[in-house]
Every structure is written in C-alpha cells, then in structure tokens.
Amino acid sequence: MNDGLTTIGFDADDTLWHNERFFQLTQAHFAELLADHADRDHLMERLLAAEKRNIRHYGYGIKGFVLSMIETAIEVTEDRVPASVIRQLIEAGQEMLAHPIELLPHAREAIEAAAQTHKVILITKGDLIDQERKLAQSGLGELFDAVEIVSEKTPETYRSVFTQHGDGPGAAMMVGNSMRSDVVAPIAAGCWGVYVPHGLVWDIERADTPTENPRYRELADLGQLESLVQGLG
Image 1 (spheres, rainbow, N blue to C red):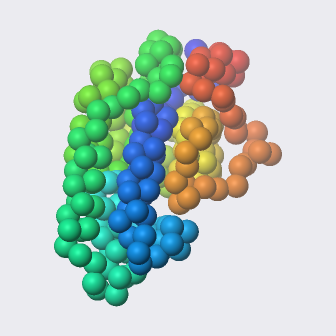
Image 2: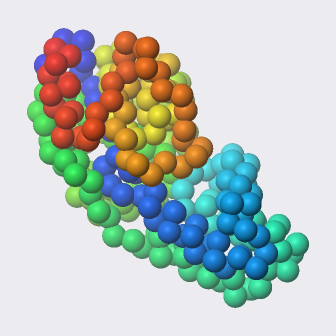
C-alpha cells in the first residue's frame, strides 16, 4: 500500500454504471413533445436554467429532473401545456427510475483491486431511494467499506467523509467522471482527484481542468486505476 494513500472514493453515476444517457434520451423525448412551442436549443436552455434553480429545492436526481421538465413545459407554453404531455413526462421519469443498471467496463475489477490494499468508499449524490436502488442492483455494495449518499459534493463534504471513514483528505483519492464534483472539489479539499471521462456530461458538472495541480490525474478508463494507485506508492 502507498504509505500516503489509504482511502479511495468512487463516484457512482457514469463512473461505475450508465446514467446520463437515460437523461439525454428523455430530454430528446421532451423536445419532441414541446416541438410546437419551442425549438430544441431554446428548450434545452430553459430546462438547464430550471434545473440549476431547482437543485436547492429538489436536490439531484430523476425526480428533480422531471419536475424541472414540467416547470419548463408550463413556461414555454404559457400555462397551456396539455395534461397528456405532463403525464408522458411523469411516465418517462418512472421509466428512468425503473431502468436496470448496466455496469461500465472494469468497474467491479477496479473496486475489487482497490479494496485489497485500501479502504474503499462510494460517494454519490442524488435521490436517496434511487441511489440505494441502483447500488443494490449493481451488485457492488458489498465491496465498499462505507457508502455516503450526499446532497452536494463540496470540499467540505470530502473533508468530512474522508476524515470519518479514512485518515483525512490528504490520504485520500476520489475517482469519478465529473470534473466539478469528483475532481475539482476533492482536490480543493486536499485529496487526489482522478478524472475518468465518460463522454456524456451534464452541463452543470463541467469545470476547468486543474491540469497544473500535482494531485490531478486522468485515466482513459477504470482499468488503469490499479496501475495508477501502485505508481503512487
């Protein structure tokens, strides 16, 4: 084990299993339903603005996303959105909540390898019930020493989690696909931040890459994590 690194945190959505693609498919359906009232680009701008406003009310996840779509539909139709459209948006959200989990390549192997030498923690944000469902269906839950489902991933979140479950942020690494939440925030807390690009990125999770920071690393996929951890030793 690396004497300095004792704890490794993993993000869940789009790091261990697919997630964002289901949001994008639903957004495409949303654009079709509202095509007579707004063009796609304008509609997506309005939806993103609603999501940003509503995070503090609803948090992250599918339920807040559906409520933001309904709010946007009401806005762009000037309160004339048909009830049938709202019903279809609710049904789309229910389908998302019931969608089976599909692990990303190397997810299980990466956690298993890390768990042999380090304490491993799942740190994810979103709706509590939905995240618990996805973790249970993933079959990965038993591999983690701890699971933290948080409302937001801030530097203070990482300081608290890695102090409670590890040896503090200085001895911790966070691995994930969100530059803002899984890389920039943990680095600000004093952790290593390891970026594993997924391809599909929610605009709210974008941030400048901390290329010059000595604790920043980027991997092509989770299959490279074991070598990275060993190389830090």
